[in-house]
Image 1 (cartoon, rainbow, N blue to C red):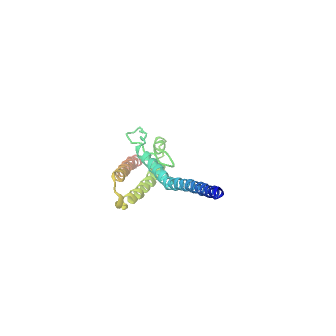
Image 2: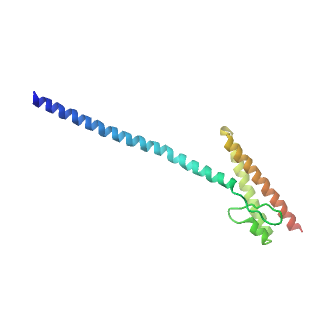
Image 3: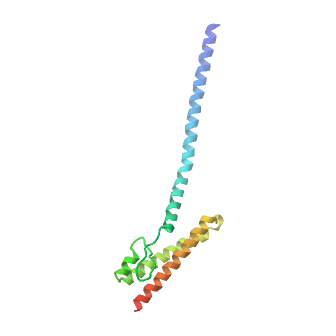
Amino acid sequence: MEEYNDKLQELINSRLSERERKLNKMSKWNKKSKSFVLRPMVGFVAAACLIGALFLIPWENASDGTTGVRSASKNVDKLIKQRNFEDALLVIEKEIQSSDSILCVLLQDTSSMDEETEYNIHAMQMKINDLKEKRNIIVNKIQK
């Protein structure tokens, strides 16, 4: 009888250890699935922060009463200071086109119109208006 109890005890112990092993694996899988869900969210949040930072960066003020507008490829203010108005105008035109396309994308996604999206739309409209003012100033300088 004792031998039977020992085998039963061993069987119970092996089943319990197997159960513990499976629970540990399941726990690891759950952690991995949570990180799998969080990874794209972290990327999305980082991208949103970068886009938000573009709107919050203070722009340099140039002389001549023009507001500073940076471009990804060239600094418009430097071109104006160098009296290279044609190139500055080209950069501003490209920036206006880019901003218009971003604004169109923001306006098309009306399904998730939250405060942040409304803010981004307003900021993009302000940027476009600033660029257009800068363009008018440059056109006036070219005509002089």
